[in-house]
Length: 389
Image (cartoon, rainbow, N blue to C red; front, side, top):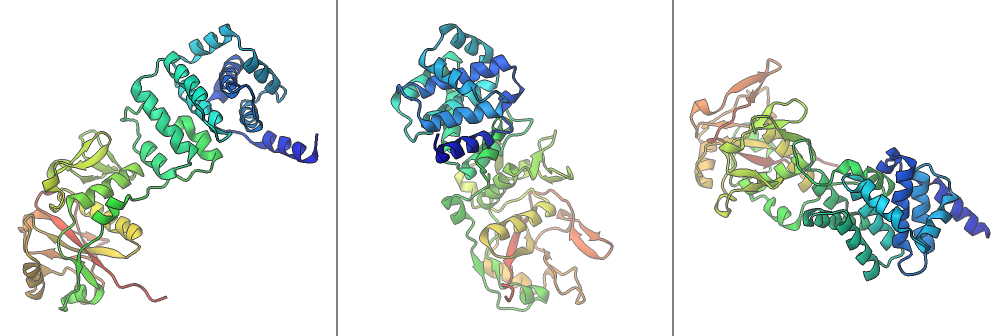
């Protein structure tokens, strides 16, 4: 063996799928698993070096002897019907069959050529395992995500899963692939979502308390249902919020209620937040607490690479920009920070009834909007000046 060949062999021996579910199987079941995968590699009559490497990594991962590679190659060249049947019966009603299909697809494409013959074997395996169309569709989508190492797509698929979900295929089954390929599951906004989140701003021409001092621009209208819906999907996928037993959204850590969807035009359907109808997309969002509004401001700051803070809480009905500006000029806003607190982040307007929000004290001095759920209160953000380098 050449030095290069020896080094490659040593490298493969150091690689391992540390969290592969098959590590928990009996040795006989591990052998069934690898025999089934070996059949894929020999469909074109030859087992290439990369296919052998993939098998070797799995052998390593399962704690089997390296010499067994030749055994599996031999089985692929001269398969035994009974052993194939034993494998099918062993995995038929177990989640490990999902790993088998994904590993089969990955090993079939490892040589850069996932051909029709190999796909026909995959299709046969799917049928033999009695997979539903939904299961097959999910598995094929997952294969594409892992094959292209698409962290954003995997984030959207796996990120929505929790103990209340009925997803067919769980993230825990594929931790070994996420770790092995160092896939960073990160949420990335779609182009349409970026367009929706492009805020319409205006520059204040007045000096009203610290609002005029701190804000460079302020939203011309309150945050919409469409904008807030994108945010909800993002933080839900990141498991920052979840549903409680009463169907309300709560902070995942504190378990405090942060939103009541019944007080908005947003529904949770097919594991995603959606606006009920097109005509409600531009409507101002309601039903959330101050805590969630603050998280929204932080979240949008991150994605738009700007610094936003809460500028105001408005009433439920749309008012013109001139009317909103007039409330500022006429000092119709309660500034709960006096002159000594010049860095006020929000205002509460008289344009809604006083019983729509409560004001509490933070650490005995700084007033904050309390956790009030209302269908009458919406909010706007202001963009702060960029800090000097």
